[in-house]
Length: 357
Image 1 (tube, rainbow, N blue to C red):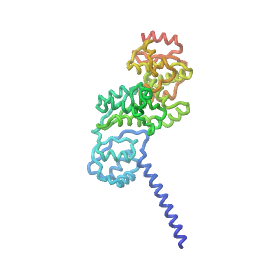
Image 2 (tube, rainbow, N blue to C red):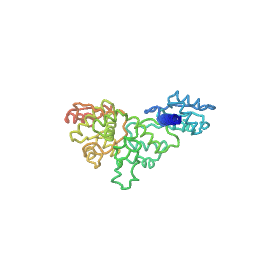
Image 3 (cartoon, rainbow, N blue to C red):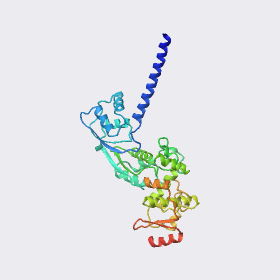
Image 4 (cartoon, rainbow, N blue to C red):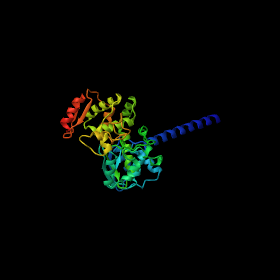
């Protein structure tokens, strides 16, 4: 009888242990994992008098949480039943349940948010100017987080505290980025909603987080398969973003540039001169091409040490998927923006005389 009782105790203990493991595993999946990896903004209203059950059901129906049961359980565990505040909110399907509850109990309603739009091809100078105009962040505060364009902080200072903020422990895709260069290239161009009191760090983290979502697992695997780093691909994408407009043209130029690197040729990208000089010109002088800078792809072979702007998705995809062609040279017509390709340097010179002079 005693032996049977002991066996029952062991069996009961095993069941309880298994139950706890399942409980906490389910708790983690539903509380800390978002419903979607690639999020989308959804307006959500908490009406006066609504209880936890009603709020949970509405959140579940809109795809903002995985389970209304775990929503109610979390609220009950932390005693937040009466903390929800009526109003309209902007939530995102990439938010975990914990963050959703934090927003709904904070009173940070949609009217307290600003909408900002970061344009594809903007560099850190453009973004810092824009955020200053929007009264979100001063340039000094912004550069303290991102670092400044063109600067190699390893050469400028031996104090690691002066380096740009390093988010590589939080975002694995940043591992290949040199820590002593800015976050140029990794602030994903998109439209964002930020709270009125948001500062530089919050905005930067939103853009980096968005980048992390947009750079799919398939893209990362293909980059690795090609023997390239994410940093190399984003640097190439930044050149494509500034050089040409359409996806098709980007893929062709991507093929031209990767071939030049393979053959040990200089890229001779005018976009890098524009980045160094801070000025766009229809045609750059011989003197311009001789300016001393590691970003000058006329004087230095291979890619520049870091991106020259923040590329959009089509430029990144083009950098990953170059198109082979018989073309070796190209230019963009100043009047139409059309890309004019040529196979020989002689033909390229003729196109320059025709469209640029």
